[in-house]
Length: 199
Image 1 (tube, rainbow, N blue to C red):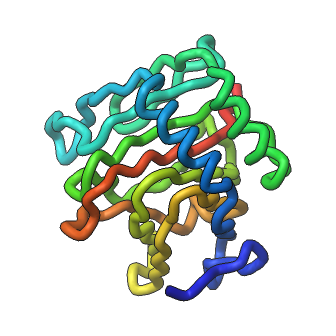
Image 2: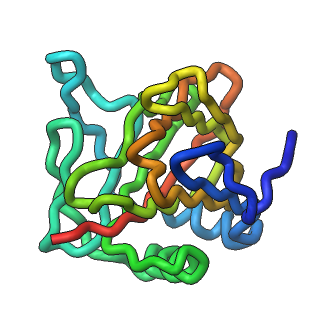
């Protein structure tokens, strides 16, 4: 597999995305995986798609300032207060991203049938050019990006255990992303997407 370095922008135009492989050590990955699976208040919630409610094909959780809810796809999530190990991960990500995050949205892909459809993280509460920091633990999954207007412009990268992906600048304006279903993955994957809510 081609290895991307952190100083190489994955996007050809109109946005920035940088990949940090092995951002966390193997020992950290094992520790965080155990705590994420055992201590996070996971839920499976319904969302609106094509005019009807369906259950999300993954488990989710939101942590951050309990006074600041976050909504998408017709649901409003009330954050759970930060835990000590989530704050550890947040601190490490903030040092590299040079950003301060108020919330983390967690997704638990239990197997290859769990997925995330095409979308942009462009809610007004995130501001004009939000930085989204995406940390992955567990099985490697394909992360696909495509230009919102020119659908033929595509990028794909395997988000590996302990990796960090930073999406910055105009990325959420011009690029959408997804985690497609796959029959190849047997293990689970947990993704943490750190974001800053503006009020």
